[in-house]
Amino acid sequence: KTVTMDEVIGLCRRRGFVFQSSEIYGGINGFFDYGPLGVELRKNIKDAWWQDMVHRRDDVVGVDCSIIMHPKVWQASGHVDGFSDPMVDCKESKMRYRADQLFFAPVIVEGETIGYVSVMEDASMEDEANKKAAEMKRKLGKQGELSPVELKSYDEADPSEYELIPSPATGKPGSLTPPRDFNLMFETNVGAIRNESSVAYLRPETAQGIFAEFRNVVDTGRVKVPFGIAQVGRAFRNEITPRNFIFRSREFEQMELEYFISPDEEEWKTVHREWINWCKEWLQSIGLRPELIGEDVHPEDKLAHYSRACTDLTFRYPFGVQELWGIAARGNFDLTQHQEHSGKSMEYFDEARKEKYIPHVIEPSVGVDRIFLAVLCSAYEIDEIGGDKRTVLKFHPRMAPVKAAILPLVKNKPELVERARGLYEKLQRRFPVFYDASGAIGRRYRRQDEIGTPFCLTVDFDTLEKDNLVTIRDRDTCEQERVTEEEAIARITAAVYG
Ligand code: ATP
Image (spheres, protein in one colour):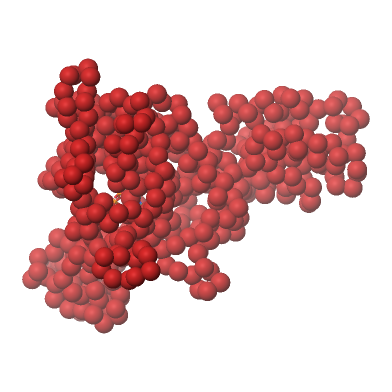
C-alpha cells in the first residue's frame, strides 16, 4: 500500500515537519514554514547534495548569488518576455487555472457527443472524469454505452471547444476564457523611488546567477572545462495554482548545477547521460525507492528552441508521476545571451583544444522541497510490531532529522539519569540527538519511529550495576543488542556517514 497525501500532510503537521505559512492569520496560499524536524531534514538534503556534488568532486565549485539581480539578467535570459504559463479564468467564480493542468473530454454515448467534462490534473483524474461523464449521461436520461473519456489539456483545445468545456468551479460551459500568458516572476522595486526603472525581480531560478558569475569564476577559480558551478538557494514563482502541498509552491529552494563543456557535437550526449545516471543514483543513495523513480524524455518538438535535449527524473507521488529533477542540455544559449546583453565576453580559451569558444552546458536542476516530499513518501510505512500497528519513517540515516534518541529506563533514579545525560552530551557533539526520559519505554520507541530516528540507546540498571553496556535498538528491525558506548557511537557514525 502506498502512502496518501492526507497521511503525509497529517504526519508533517502533527510532528512538526511542515506548517502552512502564516497559519495564525488563515495562511497564505503557496507558502510553507518548516518546523523543528523539517528544518533538519531539509538541511540534510542540502548538505548531502553539496557534499556529494561539490566537496567530493574535483570538477565542481560552488557560488551563492543574490536573490535580486540586475533586471537585465532576466531580459537576457528570456524570462521577462517568456517565463509564463498559460492561464485560464473562470468568468463567474473568478478561479484561475493553468491551462496545461486543466483537462477535459467530450462525453460520448453510442458515438454521439452529449457534452463535456473537465477535471484538474491528478493521478485519479481519469476516474473522476469517467464518474462525471456517467453522471451527465444519467441526468440527460441517455441510453446506450458510454465511451471511456479521452482527456486532453485545455492548452490543446480547439478554440471551437472553449464554449463547450465546463468550468471545474461552476460546472457551466462557456464560463472559461481562452488561455493567455501569465508571467510567473514576482516584481519588486529597488531603492526609494518606485517607477519603471526601479523594477526588479525575485529570481525564479538560481541558474542565471551562475551564468552571470561565469566570468568571475573562470578568472579566479583555476577551473578548466569541463567543470561545473553549483548553487543552492531560494527561488520564487507566482504559480497560478500552487498545489499538492510543498510540490508546487510560490517560494521554494533549488539545487542547480551548470556543467560547462566544449561545443563538441558528440560530447554533450555522453555528459548528459552521465548526469542523468549520477542524479538517479544519488536519489537512491539518500533513500528514494528505485521503483518510484522514472525517466521522462521530452519529445524533440516540445523542446525550447535553444534546448538540445531534456530528461526529467520523475517520482511517483501520491498524486501522480511528476517531475522531480530536470536534466537539460542547453547548448550555449544562456552565456551567448549574456554576452550579447552585457557586452562582456563569455568566451573561454581551451588550452588543450587550442581554441576559443563559449562553453555549452548540461543543467541538472532540482527542488529541495520536491526531494523532501519524495523522501517522506518513500520512507512512510505502517507495519506491525508484536501485534501493534506503528507508523514509521524508514529514513536513510543520513536523512534522519534525529540520528539517535537516548532514553534512561526510568527518570527517578539519579545515577541512571546522570549516566544517560553523559552519553547524550557525548553524542550531541557529533549529531543531532534527542533525550527523552518521560513515558513508558515502548511509547518512547514509537515516538522515535514516527519521526524516523534510526537508533534508540537505552541506559538501564544493568548498565550501572552489571555490564556497563547500553541497549541499541534498530528502528527497522526493532532488534535490540547490548553494546559498549563506543560501539554504539561507531555504529551510528557508520550508518550516517557510510
Ligand atoms: P513545472 O513544469 O512543474 O512547473 P518546470 O519544468 O517549470 O516545472 P524547472 O523550471 O525545470 O521546472 O525547475 C527546476 C526544478 O525546480 C524542478 O525540477 C522542480 O524540482 C523545482 N521547482 C520548479 N517549480 C517549483 C515549484 N513551484 N515548487 C517547488 N519546486 C519547484
